[in-house]
Image 1 (spheres, helix red, strand yellow):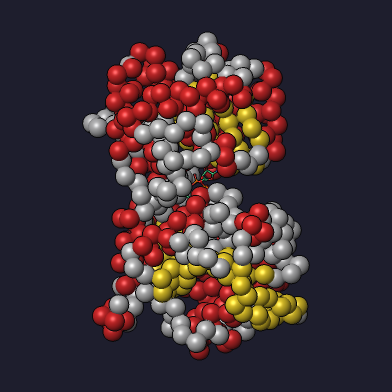
Image 2: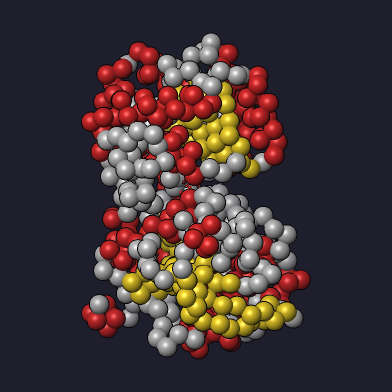
Length: 481
Ligand SMILES: Nc1ncnc2c1ncn2[C@@H]1O[C@H](COP(=O)(O)OP(=O)(O)O[C@H]2O[C@H](CO)[C@@H](O)[C@H](O)[C@H]2O)[C@@H](O)[C@H]1O
């Protein structure tokens, strides 16, 4: 089978969060299973672009409303990622350093999707599956099936849409209706949600199958999806939750070049101690105390707004018996609060505001506990990385966190779970972490060893996706493969 993944992110070319990790890994594992999976994404101006060699594979043009733009598609020459990576270049739109956060993001990503559809429609053969990820690619299923310009070539190609995060939907007003290439006007409803063009809703309506990144999140979306819950309920017949895997080659404490001491489950105690010592040195913390860290976008969805109060309360309540370290960026108000706390709780707390891939690896290796009090967590990769690095996850019982972590109080448990995203729940969990670290050493060590043996690699999930694709192929295609 030939599968094209369409995405705004793909590690290591460009990553803002978990979407990049998934699209950077899933195709590699699908290829290892004997299929041909490729990725197409925007050509941002990132380091990876300049450090690698590319060949031109296509040039074309498209209209975004009244604006005609030229685009080109280039391909990485060596297949070094384990899959073919294609980049779409559109001057004036995609040639930026950052992935998101520009005033014209709507125009940028609609133009990207137009270019992808145009390029695919000109292929000599057609891919078997087009797999789109999140709202930046959400108009592709509609355009392939209904836009006059593409439907004759692409209307029969099955589309799969994966919701990595239902909170962001990419809505824009109908005043920009002319961005969408011509289609039969009675299909307008397939673009609309709540009187706006909503790419996430459109993809859920038009894709042949809809997936999200954990079974529990699939259930939750039917009750709470930033306004789309009725739609998810309505489309449940074609929807399924498939848990994310992690790239065991990139995230491996035995070989990770970002950390100061490599280790495996036999050497977990010594290995983690060395990495913790490094972190404690860099951030002025006490290596003797349990180190609780948070890594991620500083936004409400991750309950990052609760961190300042929860950490202050914990420092007072437990008389500074634990240390805290945060790596993240996002809401300026939260960033400012955390920066103030660097001084106020010097020696107990520190934060690094910004994005730092290397530091994140060191933190997974050098922390004792990883905190994820998320209000919404479609899958969560951080807890899976924590498990692989022998770091106890402290998570809210929701979404993918519910599906992947078992509280140590339960049979065969290895993590700490809290029911609510609240200052009180976080502080209570901090108390349990301190108790585990100081008073239950044997249990704590056994837990670390146990969690390092859990396999969260991509094999199972990659197979599940392939099964889903196969269900969409005409029967003769299945027997050909
Ligand atoms: N400041 C920083 N510096 C360095 N690294 C940083 C960082 N901030 C975040 N990261 C990294 O970004 C990734 C975050 O992944 P998550 O899956 O936890 O969250 P995200 O909300 O982005 O993804 C969404 O999509 C993914 C993939 O489907 C779902 O797992 C998730 O639940 C959903 O919200 C991890 O690799 C983490 O280490």
